[in-house]
Length: 202
Image: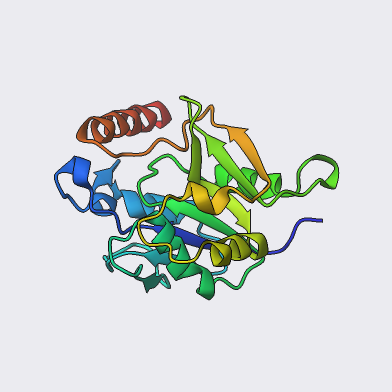
């Protein structure tokens, strides 16, 4: 049986170094900020925790948190948010996923129960290059929290250390929902794709 409800944690504190220090979550694709596009994909979360500097958003009711130290990396951001998570399942999302949508969120959450009730600890997208995307993923809160506790100080440590003890299901991503915008070229590609998608709907 699928657990009811989930919380969403959006990691939005990166320095955008490959974007010359630009505030990446505030950049726009298709007329909306990257952050707002991600928030729209998880609109039915019980609570939405955004870890990073507070910014204007279309979404009301967002709870803002900061990692310790600020800029301490994605693992520090997850560590800052986990104590506030109350749902049995939690999404971990990067703030720069312009093509994440509600259907993909539902697919990740459903995958936690596996086939035939074989439950896993987490389900994450694997991008077109075969790379795991741990910030485009759903996890069971209890094992994720236990893995976090076992790690100790999270500052500056890689996120893969958190995932090592977890039983993970990896999902292909044919729609490119895990496409992220780390460079200006990737942002331009996302804007081009969003424009083509809009023209196709028109």
